Length: 295
Image: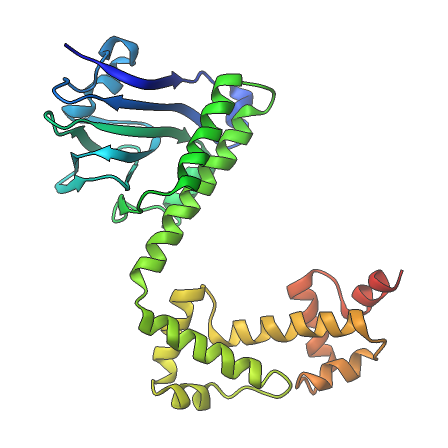
């Protein structure tokens, strides 16, 4: 006999106006499947395509599926994965996949489906990828809370609920990708980045020599550049300029100093070059920044 408890599922209609936002929540649900239950239970409650989840299907949308209890299997194209509590699956549109709990064990799953130009651009730009579709993210209350907030928006369907639900979906994606990056970077990398940051902070009032920093850490400049960019999404030079400008902005707020003097304090011999960098980072010139603060 097919049984579930703690179940919620909803498939959302959307309008052409909703599509213009570029982000759509298409489905959301949570289901605890008991042991010895054919999956998916209550098939008739799902649209026809979604019923084939255990056999193999291709969707036109994205889905995030979070397993919080039990065990199961996930097959994405030719790759097979074992699902355990804390597993997260990213289903991509146009890619064949299937998943189901172990029949004798069952599981508890939470899912959200989404689509739209915004998410497709993330896929086109490589932020989402078929090489990253399975994550051992672990059991976390804040992830369950994000799913719960999405479910609340879907249930209430108040004005702009689509936008609010998609905000939470994007937060979930960021959490998954951030966790993956942290997991991929060993402590060795983190130590290198922290040492480099310390040396940059120590040299903030002068001019940086990346060769000296890499020599002090014991790696090549090219290797430092590679590790630093992978870990922070910035090159060492970009980070150094960032902290200089941030500190210069604070100095302009605290002291009534000429812009030329502030530039010189941070190692910029050319105040015009400093002003261009400042505006590029903050959106306003140093003089505009000072005038706004002093109002």
